[in-house]
Structures are given as C-alpha cells and as structure tokens.
Length: 102
Image (cartoon, rainbow, N blue to C red; front, top):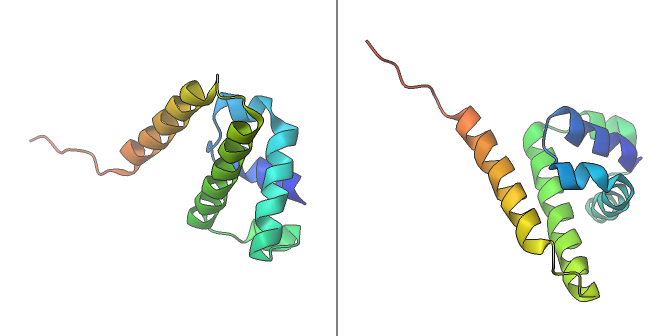
C-alpha cells in the first residue's frame, strides 16, 4: 500500500536523495502516517492531490526526524534538514510566476 505512495512521492520529485536511498524506512513511516489518517488503499492514494501528498510527506519527515533523534543518530540530521529545505525551496521557486521583461 505505502509503496504506491512512495512512488507517487518519487514521481512528483518530492523526495530527497537521502529519502530515496532509505526506501524501506520511508515506506514503513508512510504506512504509519496513512494508517493514522485513515487512508487504506491504493485507489484513495492515487486520487490524492499533490497538496495532500506534500502534507503526508511532511508528517513522514517529522516522524522520521523524531525517531532518528530518539535513536541518537543526530549526525546526519543537519545535512538531511538542509537537503529537505533546499528541495522544498526549489519547489516553491518553481511555483512562483516568472518575471516578465519588456
């Protein structure tokens, strides 16, 4: 079920390279978030808007960060936070209207 959500994240270029490398962890966390939201089947995942996908991925990232801190693996947190911030910034820049020059 959540592998489909993972591939939706992947196909919309929402994942960082770090998240792509840790596919199984991301799938498990995504499954937890989807269960908490009551989303249980691929048919519902396929109909989610990109905004809802972003919201779910944000929750997955929060959960992943929380678990990493709990396990004491804070070494890569800063680097990963920078990658996520860069990825999110790049997407917002893409959404802004281009400046028109006459």
